[in-house]
Length: 310
Image (cartoon, rainbow, N blue to C red):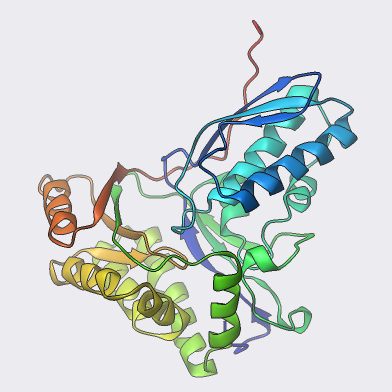
């Protein structure tokens, strides 16, 4: 986020075994989208337009039913997961040819971050090296950049089976659409030195921590990133509730961080730590934050199946 290297954007992320998008498609005489009433209008419109595009390409109209999805606008990549799930399901249903790159391009996602794209298809812990800086005029969020290709995936590691992730949702400032774009316009690029320090924490801290299953290194690296550069600005924007919750978790020795643009806070801990879940829930309650549960990592990509009896 600072034009401090030959590449722009990039980062590290991981996938959870929490269902981000459960979508069912059925061939139908008229295209329709159901189960989307709690999605915002922008997402509904984009999904409807996507179904129309798929119908033109595959010559088959479908009824799309969204059975479940992650909460929007808290940093879980809900729109990316939904759009890719619809595309994957359609290709599976009508046996429409198309490789992963074509499906990504059709989704229009991945303009800035490639974590959601690569994570959907592969799962695990992912290092995305962004795009050539010479191709980027302005540092804007993924939703504000049309993407014809995904940012390059440099590395995929398995999420440690011995770790778990607790999710907490504090009361914080939500950011999406035009508000998110304005935040990027006002705060990016960051100072080159801050960008380089962030990269050092990512590549010599967070990635080795996952590879070595070193929770202590992960905790210190997540804390370092939270006090520097763009992530620090993101956390400040979300407000005191997020800042104080993160500090409380770190004071208790946990590896804690905030999702992209927040306000969701994640805490990574050893599955063998029998006291952790109760303590995390208690901290959430003390900060009037919503506990969203405990999850493992997801080390495979999205899956589609056909109901042969239908």
